[in-house]
Length: 495
Image 1: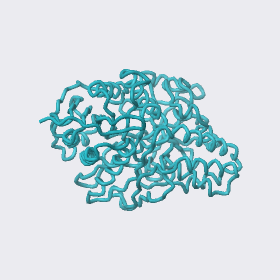
Image 2: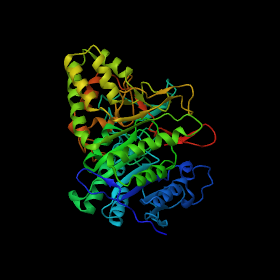
Image 3: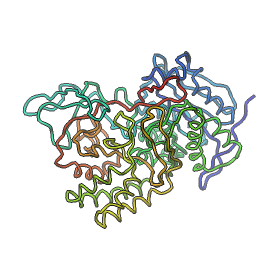
Image 4: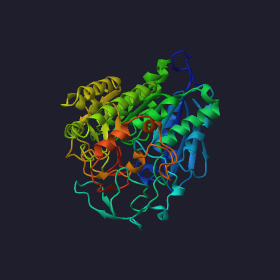
């Protein structure tokens, strides 16, 4: 028996609409996620995520998903509300390509015209990622220093995190020049979709569905690690209404929370887009709280039309900080160290030298620091602009490392922002060369740059903050680990 999708989701000035859940699941580079939860998941139909999506459809919500698995095809899963799954091989998709996501979204919009699109990005993510043309990266294109090609040597990280790569030859000044990843890998070849690419995919899907007149995506749920980031949220803001996500680690649960969230949505008959975005965040919290081991997370939800004002406030604070440098660099560095850090250096301690800092926490610490009135005023304005974005924050020792405490209970939390080398050690995240170059084609392999970098002074502040710091090395270009929920043994797999 088929149950028709009833009108559910309302937006300001709009009639209620049915919901279509679109799920993008790039598991192809990870055997564990592909066969979650017990390595016995032989077919895509047996995967817990797909089983959860069938429950969502049974509740009266349309489902379109693209699930890519290791040593398997990429599968499109179509389930009309109340209907049966149709599983179609799409051969093998390159899931880091924005065209894969744009095609899925366009398919969903065409199949379910007029429905509100809720997009969930599953499995993989790491906040800001540059757009890189891998065809332009080759060993022969590495820059010369004093007429000789540079090369890399690996050494251990003294802090116990990921390996550091020393660049032999004369260290270039900041910003660094074009770089192949130090271990010889081509960046982007096996990484998640770039920040620019995600924005392009949303834009392209709307273009195919009717251009600027096409409805925006109602909610983007970043159900992965580190993607509740200023750069990413600003990039998708023109093409979506709300976003939900997690600034630090999230834990992979294979859609465990979705059936309850959408059953509750159906029971309400009509709810706002904001309420559904919040429910997705709270649903993740509830699913993790039900597990035996501690899984502390921090979740946020934001109306994306707020992002231009947030970017403007970041720009004004960055300019005030630049004016305070170098005289007040010690005070600024102390404020950064006291701000909430999120893990990005392969250890689980949330402290510098992590390269992701909570933007609201940083604003609060700068406001209380002995800095100029201009900095204090700009920090206060930014903090106010970031109000009521945090939905929840847990405090516990994560099972992945019970020697550390993750405390997300502070009210001064909102979203992360990339702030490499906060402790002025000269050791940088591999993304820094791309992040520091604000213009497209400033580096041969970087054809696109997100608007947040081009249109704010945030990069200028980082460069002013790091001015005079001798470049010591790059942190290993490895996507941070993704903890798994309900897996035997205390281990995790790469995100």
